[in-house]
Length: 164
Image 1 (cartoon, helix red, strand yellow):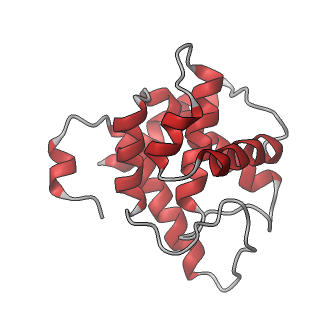
Image 2: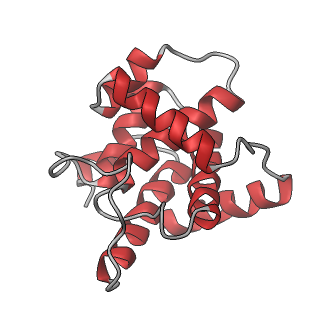
């Protein structure tokens, strides 16, 4: 769980809600009986940070705006729906899915993006790993990155509500 110091910062509710939504999705999957197959999103070993802290690390070090986290949740949801049984949110995959989805969202949405070296360092992975995650997510999304305004606004409101 994210520490109290994290909540003392000026962190947008959308960012906090993104972390909480991913935490809940991972817990729900971990309680189910069916394990997910290993994928490029599987974290080797145990991540140092819980997903809420990891999301805050991405927010701080990558300079992502709130819209990136909204798009990232849409992309994760879409990848899971388009690839049932192959892509899922679990304790083993949630960090790398968050990293890949925020990177793809930033490259699609932002005019100013960093090199993959910056994103890899923020996500605690090697650049080569990040390249694989990025390419994998593009494939799992069928290269469809457009998000309808109605869906975007609905997800944004859900993230704000889940932060409370």
